[in-house]
Image 1 (cartoon, one colour):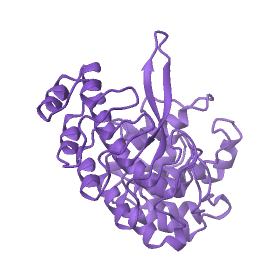
Image 2 (tube, one colour):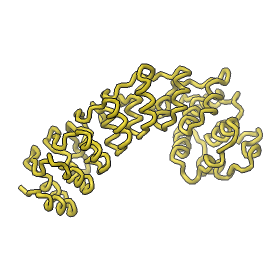
Image 3 (cartoon, one colour):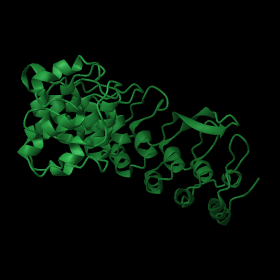
Image 4 (cartoon, one colour):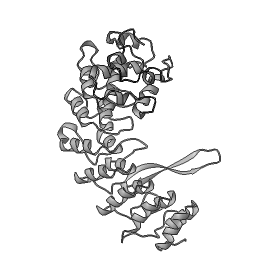
Length: 346
């Protein structure tokens, strides 16, 4: 720990034990920084300083975070620390920017971005995200706007080809979605843009939101012109062999397929109410009801069954109905629901 006055001495309410002695030691293996970073993001019990820092000055918050991550709070030493090789060529000031973005600390961001020769790089990469994409992920409109005002590249993408709008949708950040779409000329977003690589090949932001059950995000996207029945490649598990090796296939899934397959009944209901095709088929001719039946998501199935257009006994490529796949996967409750609704075993 630095010989300089500690943040706890400046602010006695900070829980020093849980910050400085969290049980994670800084070593040269390069993984410790990521572990500590993830502790902050996951708000694990050992990292209680997020509550203690409320209402403190930005300098204090910056020093506490820097100390926890293992950086000397004397900023003149930050460049020297990089030479140790521990940080995998990531400058501490850049990593601190990523942390402050995740925590929504715009005032701390201002210090890091405008602090003389150690000015943070607003387009630095950490864990495959730039600060801008991280701000979108965390849902801080203020952080997003500040970064863009200071040179963040709005067209940044993840290695999988996800745009800022895909990320906002994936994490259910409806307000960020609304803000970016309303300023589309600034953020260069398209509500029907498709991602480029597996496991998100051809996914639109609506696919992302529906796959996680973010109904409000789906609603905002739909309000701004998102198409609900676009199909995308989706990598899905087919079987598990005796050698424990999973086999995958590519299937054309719509947002409704994804919502049903993951059991998000409210999202299923919203999509159906707004015109999604209840009988849409994947490349294997499976409907959303097939997918809900396979996984045993009865509430999602019940929403699908409310549609007067549903073909309850539609057969997939293998001549199986939703009831057939429910029986094969031993989904007993689903089997009862489907039989009552008129499902047939063929």
